[in-house]
Picture 1 (tube, rainbow, N blue to C red):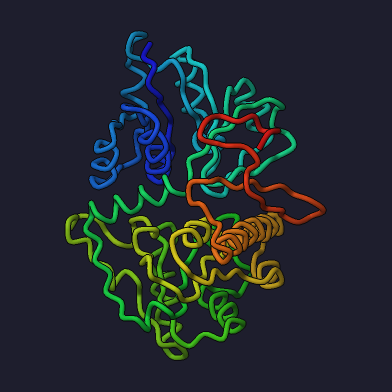
Picture 2 (picture 1 turned 180 degrees about the vertical axis):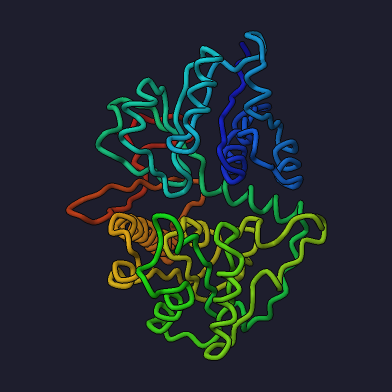
Amino acid sequence: MVHYPAAFAPTELFVVLLSSYFGNQESEFLIIVPDKISVSLPVDKYVRSIGGRIMTAGEAKKLDKEQAPAHLWVHPFGKTHISSVLVEKFGAEYSVYSDGIKNELGQAKLEEVFPHYKELLFFGFAWKRPFIKTGTPVRFCTFHDIDSAFDALKSIVGAKLSFDADELKKDWLFLRYWGQGPGEFVDGLDYIDVVKRYLSTEDASSVVLKGDSRIMASSTGDVLAGLQDDYDVVALEDRVEFIEADSVEADKFFAETMIPDDFSGRLHCFDSSLSVYAAVATDADIRFPREELITDVFANEGFARNVVSYAGLYRSVCEKIRQLKDSGSFKIDAPLVVERKEGSFFVREAQSPTDKAVTIENL
């Protein structure tokens, strides 16, 4: 068995996040992706530039014992059946990394699917949950690692952002994959209705709109067209050019590569962990929807509760980052810790040095 780190990444975003961590820790590493996931050339170039390589799950299953990794990092939700097959195939020990910058783990998955995890990896901050085993070693991919990864991708694709000084102070609205599946709106509401209702509470007149490739293209087009009578609106994708990567479509590439470092306007990204990245990388005023709006527009009450919860989580983390920045004490390579107390999220700086693994109770 080989002893460099390996991880299963269910999406391209996790390829980037995991690589940003391993690239600063090891001279070589392996990222395994589902057979049907297409990794873009810029991401592949980034991974290779920091010592990594990408392999499909089908290719990984063909590795013999001498080539197989001795330890595998797995995702707590995405395509866990593939992770389980790989762990069994390799006969490997495994650890679990959290679900992106929202740092969700999932009690059922840890107790039923991955009960024998050795360590946990969080991105930027640790969300301490009561079901995490006492004594579990915790590692961090720091905000610095993540920011450096997206800066590298900006350079690889040659991101050219065409915005004047005034536009960098406007309202930028990033759509989410709402309005479909469990996130369907109540009868009679279209995406444009929800967006208009939200913006009516934000005193906005000029909007830069970013679509989301996970929703129907017609939805993004409908929102853009529907706002034009009442707002000065432009599509963010129309102001971004990837001069080094003509094959990459702006509406399908990472939104993190399209937020200028000198953006200082209001950023509306609903329940997306993009808000945390933007709080770290810019001086944006991060805005979140009011709870009553969320509960009014979604047909599924459970989905609405999740949106309320994650919006509360991100708001709390963003507010802590802003507080630390305003006091001049924010350290981009120092992780934060989130705990739930009396129904609210409490965010603080980690209590122990975290350049190495620290047990969960000592954070």
